[in-house]
Image 1 (cartoon, rainbow, N blue to C red):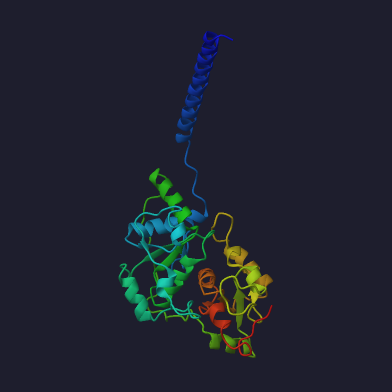
Image 2 (image 1 turned 90 degrees about the vertical axis):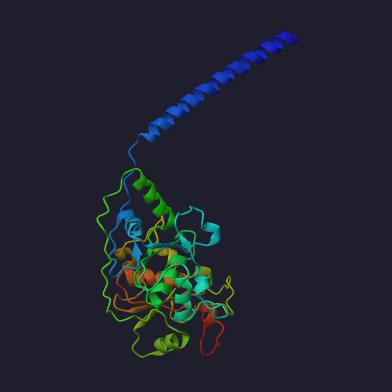
Length: 328
């Protein structure tokens, strides 16, 4: 084939390709225009759920949005690697480690109330501040629940974490921006200011005594991974196994596929299958009291009396094996 014919074929090919590419752009542009005019999907039921904030430690994205409009402080408790997936504007950051003992094996235990309140004051949080904590339920370790449990432990009652986490909250905000929000009617938090402060933590000696008591009122949940329950020690425990009599219930089994909490009925059904009565006291533990603090916050929000063993396996496994046994 001559050079002239080769050039002619190449020019025709380029013109046809450009024409096809142009058509693709037109089709894609029409598609975007079509999508832009579609009605925004309705909010999910979980995103707009009306949690009873007198009792609950959990709130919906909608409730978080309304409280933020009234001046609530947003705390991002996610790990640094997750803090931008997605990024939430106008937040302060604090980690559970900042409010916990630094020395092993007591890393899961809290600092003194005075130390914690001092650290919180530096980020603008006082005893009467409304605090909303953001986490990542599907990819995190329950840090949001640990932070709220900590705040509640030191007496900051108006502290909550968002059901569905950062993704649910930012999704709600994006829909609010498209005009789908209900009018802010003013969300009030009605709590009994004179209510006696509840003990939300339990130490190793109290737990040991409760387990050996003739009239058993405490039921123990191991909320770690199944491999940990069976004896593996991937997170630094001195010994492997679980506390005698503990039931295994992985903390993320309380979530649905979207990262929202399952209903009260679903969770109570799971507890019943594990022979844990509604009127029992549930003590949860994990490795360092993080996942178990989250679990405690869920149970309390659903009306179950619950405590967190903050020392958890880091502490228990470091103690005398005869006094504080583990089974596999």
